[in-house]
Image (cartoon, rainbow, N blue to C red):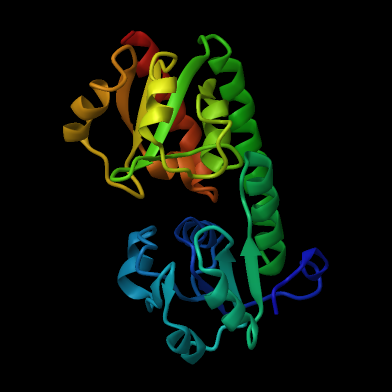
Length: 264
């Protein structure tokens, strides 16, 4: 069964499989070591879980039979990161929470929901309060910086970017970046026509470390396209992980912004 809002206070789950890397980290930070029975091969944080917990395939290539052998009473998944067909198959015999996060506010509600489902309501609500306070202070600091027209690239060959209705877009806004591709939905492929239309208004190009592993060698390629923009690498986990990583994201954003504006 796929859980709905009314299920969040009806019972507490104690045997969990997480198929979302950022939510695996959240479960760890909520203190659910004994409860989590399995994770994906992409759940690299925390390192001790990656080394010790059973792995049940990739986020889009779940080993459903192996998951069943772990006898979980809850699967924690994500609408964007997992495949609809596999989640529906799991939901035939197991309870599945399908998270759907596209903003800071929806991330905070998701953390609360998971806290309620796992018997960690107090810890989850305290975490949300800490995150809210950090982002409140961040907004006061970023207001001192001018808004920058920015593009956030997530893939190469073909070029793909983060558009509207994405968590990344909301994090860009938190940094006082104006997403020049906000008129595009989700994660579109960028055509040459789109590049030509946007390149002269772009002031900042962010090359994410995930899912495509952009690195220093890719900067000249993008600099040759966006001649008037600053091209820099961005930590993809800080911009796209919507669990407890948000606590560290604010500290990262503060240093990130300071370096951008001081080097202009």
